[in-house]
Amino acid sequence: MPMIYKMKPPYTSNAAVIRWVEEMAALCQPDKIVWCDGSGEEKKRLTEEAVAQGILLKLNQEKLPGCYYHRSKPDDVARSEDRTFICTSAADDAGPTNHWAAPREMYHKLHALCAGGMRGHTLYVVPYLMGPPGSTLTKVGLELTDSLYVVLSMRIMTRMGRIACEHLGESEDFNRGLHCMLEADPARRYIAHFPEDNAVISTGSNYGGNVLLGKKCFALRLGSWLARKEGWLAEHMLILSAESPAGEKTFVTAAFPSACGKTNFAMLVPPPHYAGWKIRTVGDDIAWMKPGADGRLYAINPESGYFGVAPGTNAETNPNAMETISHDTIYTNVALTPDLDVWWEGKTKEPPAQLTDWKGRPWTPGSKEPAAHANSRFAAPMSNNPACAPEVNDPNGVPISAIIFGGRRATTMPLVYQAFDWIHGVYIGATLSSETTAAAMGAVGKLRRDPMAMLPFCGYNMGHYLRHWLRMRKKISVPPRIFHVNWFRRDESGKFIWPGFGENMRVLKWILDRTHGRADALESPLGWVPGPHDFDLSGMKDFDAAKMAQAQAINMEDWRREIMAHDDLFFELYADLPKELTFQRELLVSRL
Ligand code: GTP
Ligand code: SPV
Ligand code: MN
Image (cartoon, rainbow, N blue to C red):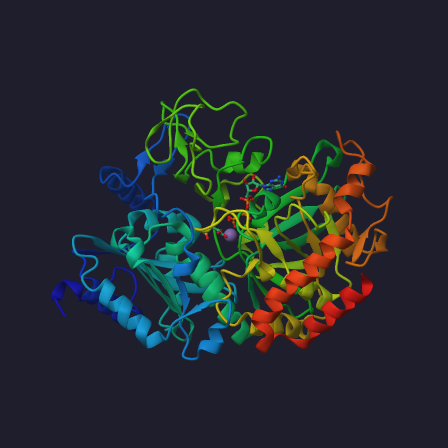
């Protein structure tokens, strides 16, 4: 091994860490190795380097202090689900909904791709924590990357640097993540997970979900594998805290597929009618949940920042997000104003007269294409959020009273209903569906089943995953109540029926009342629904009982089609589908 790859790391003596970094360096052959410590001095230095190399553009510092801009390659702007692999010895462990490859073959292929792949580049060693320091749920990852954009983003999204090695000590239990950019070449793009080794190799991309390895790769795909093994849940869920005017705090999680409203719901600002209520954000994308000694389910947010969708975000829809991203934020693929401010579709009612679009071309309101990419994003530290919950750093996590599932459905799905019990709730989650969004490469607006919003993120056999959910019930004596919502139902003219955003507080309020046994409900074929006097519409503009009936309508024709569509998933999973779900389907048919 060449001497420059012999390690004397500045802050750890962990032999397993050192050996692995040496091996990967010898493979990728970078010109230089830098161990990131997570300090402010380091942030300043690396940011300056990123600007000097043209990786980041410094934005208008008067309007956006500490903010920078990154443009990715036009064919590298969203997660690449068809290049994402679960590599287990047995194909059955990856299951029918994942792309599978044999670990040995995938290692062979990717080691060949990475050989010398960092020549001319610097290899950054990025140790990071997923979860607050001191929590039994918290885990350590190490990402080796040749992307400064990744380093600076990981610094926002995780607790990064020396702190992670301190947490690790001499243990060998850490996630091994290798990211080799390879010019973001789609032909060399692989996001390969090796659950049996708690390892991931990502090549040929520089886009968020493909390369910020703590997030989807570790916290969800490998996390879900570990969760089943260790008896907990790793989920694609926001976590919010709702405090009533009387000071009663209730914690809720919600699983919505990508770009279906998690960040917005987690940052909800109640309308004036709900003065005195405080909604605070614990997490906006991922929840790790474990049964506590008291029989309740406790959740932590493993992340420390938000990698959020820019389009649609504005001072009315999400004022907390606007405040969060007003400083110390990295923007990716949004549009630029002439004075280096940022813009995206939906930021203001009237677009600016002149912009530079996300591809770097001049743009005017007459231009045919959107100025910002539909999946343009911000990365901002959660500490910027004026509504950040103090519990984010609580090693015990927060006790969850309700779990909400929801998708983007133009038809069929009512605004809100409640499962009869846990098993019925698992069925509702398992059959969750949504129109696809720009968060993944491929068609947008296509209806697909997305069980628990985990279709792209479940690191093992989906049938086994659903069974794990059913089994968890036995470890939780006080199970969260389970609900389904749909903010996205449309009327005949194609307009959203429900106003959404802050008004979602009304739905949340009914959910909270139900979990506390305070609101009545009617029994519908789908589950419990609000009765006419249990859902508060007062103070709403242009929304009355008739509109509510439209939002809640259960149309038999639609539901006949819907249940047939459940079969697509059930056929796919049939070999491993828990029988409870088949029974639930029969019960639903008989109720309809
Ligand atoms: P990921 O980060 O991809 O996991 O997305 P997410 O689930 O956090 O979705 P996000 O909150 O970023 O919302 C995605 C898009 O949906 C944005 O354009 C939002 O403005 C829009 N959106 C969010 N909530 C609502 C709502 O209640 N009603 C409507 N009509 N749109 C919403
Ligand atoms: C998602 O697609 O669900 C995201 C964005 O949260 S990414 O991190 O790119 O996966
Ligand atoms: Mn997400």
